[in-house]
Image 1 (tube, one colour):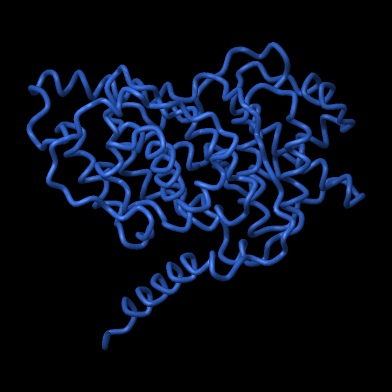
Image 2 (spheres, helix red, strand yellow):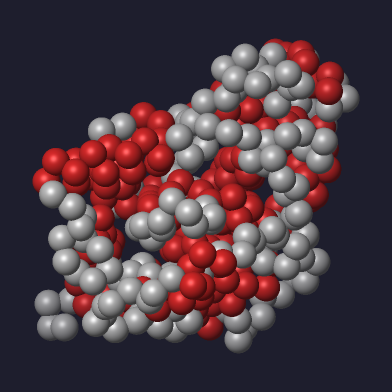
Length: 357
């Protein structure tokens, strides 16, 4: 993003217009369209590690971590199922052009006064505008023009909103965003549904910020035990506010059995289940008594939707903190949760197709 480009806009704004909860309900069912091709994680693509290092270095001095984050999502979606489009004859220059164009597309999505010449000059990139536009067109076509990717950042807003934190509590949003963006350097996170990564990130941050409330997070079963452990390790270096107000607050009077955040995988919790339960929670307090009257509930819903659509209107002004994992093998024990999830999905597919089962 070029210097002085202060006018940002939220690429998700129109996705959340109207009834925010209803919008999320439909988008939970669409997130699979933005996931990587099967086998991408096992392949452990070497070019991805190069891409992470290249983009992190190129964007080191620029103010909004959202841009390189989106650029890497475009990279992952394309590379997981396609070859890099050929625009330049030199393979090395063509690869660099491709990475640059992932960034330019993300920057165009983020700011409404994007200037290509300024963008390339600030990053000392010497590519003809014609070649940049050709590569961008190839990328857009391969991605079916779906550039407003449903990422964990997007779904995190849904889960943060379910916390119903009092106004005096510090917001976990910045820490959640930072944790999700930091996790993108590790290819293993691309194997999970964006909503699952989001639930785990919100769960980890909020458990650290608000320990007395941790047992009441209704979305804990939508998270993954494996991701919870991975994200907890990544919390080092992230500024997580101390939720002192929550420590002195009374614990909510609830009879709900706490979910096992460290054991449940996303395959055990259906999207319809969590969205239906969320709609109830949005209008009821933790004691399960009605929270507000009908008119007040509508006003509260409007305020929630306003918060959701404005969540990305400010630059994410923190360091990427991407660390490239040089190990070429995925730890089989750590990956057991992922293997189990895939095995469960396979068994379900077989049972759906077999009339005997």
